[in-house]
Length: 145
Image (tube, rainbow, N blue to C red; front, top):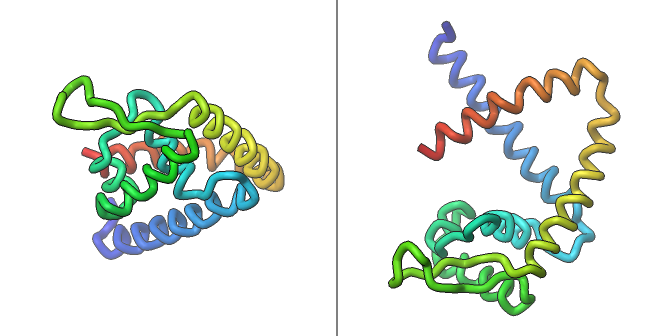
């Protein structure tokens, strides 16, 4: 079993890797039509959409900042606000058809760039990465509980 100091060191290394990973993902499609923040917001809306407060929390910003982002996406025709079916007093932000198309297009471009990067790894490195993905998902899910 790991000692606390070892856990702290692992936590520090993992956080740094995540931070650099975020920077990498933001650069994957720097020439795309959507900024990283816009695409991140749009991806949150996949499915049934989200309330503005949830979007703000996920972006790590205050509600007014998230609202600004949503207004820009609405003006671009990528998202819209509509009544929340679970609570008539609340509003959900949902993707439009154009928003879904934009997300799919950006995902495809970014996946192509990432696949090219992953192709430079050895088979052993790619297998190690594939094996780590479920563990990373467990960490993310634990943080959401």
